[in-house]
Amino acid sequence: MATAERKGLAINGWLVLDKPQGMSSSRAVGAVRRLIGAAKAGHGGTLDPLATGVLPVALGEATKTVAWVMAGRKRYRFTLRWGEARDTDDAEGRLTGLSPERPAAAAVAAALPGFIGTIRQRPPDFSALKLAGRRAYDLARGGETVELAPRPVDILELRLLGVPDPDHAELEAVVGKGTYIRALARDLGQALGTLAHVTVLRRLQVGRFRAEDAISLDNLAALGHSAAASGHLLPVETALDDIPALALSEDEAHRLRCGQAVTPLRPSDRARIDQLGGGATVRALTGGKLVAVAEIAAGSLRPVRVLNL
Image (cartoon, rainbow, N blue to C red; front, side, top):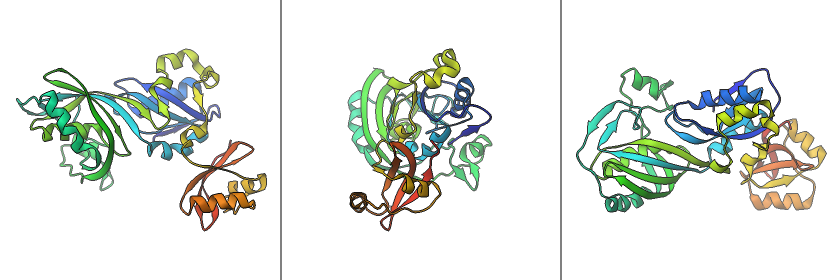
């Protein structure tokens, strides 16, 4: 996660940005922070400059919940260009190969089930992953050989939307953490006996954050500092909606805020902890306010991230 922190307003919450094409995620976060005057901002999952769509921007204490957003499912709509390989696996890269083969729609549809489920995927050479402490994209740009090992990723849905012409196919995918759509395009081309790269990529959803809720930078600029009170700012706990909640007394919440493990006194709470089991993550609340994200360990709650709301 890229985080920008400077003097500004103590704004806590999430803003769903519709990231424009041609802008990096870190630049987009910086623009949001400046436009609304927030002291601290980060994002919940990088989008390539080529890509548009949902970029969840965490403000203030919401930056402490970014890990749960990044672990969520993501929905993408994308267009492939058949017959061309690019070193970045998208249209921004250098042409590295040509193929005369153009798969028919029926062949594309038949190949998709082989990519659904837990598969092994080799990340693109131009990625932010590190090799010996250096970013893969820095090595690749310097002309060095990049050898990233395949790793397991989850693809939950993958469907063909249309074939506008023989050179292109439009698809939609729902994927888990760490999945690269660029790599999926490359591998799909190889499976169909040709080459392929991504020309259009739009993210429609990240966990609970959807394109329908997103705001453009232009509209955000029009709102300025009033954006925080415009209805576009979502609560910090939006990122944690899928995590069970547990209400604590004020004394228990105070101890959790101080970094101490807490064993709730109420029998109903202890029964709930036993039901969830060791290792489970919960939202600890008091008076309806989020106190911390905590982990159950030996029948107690251990604070993982304490929030100051």
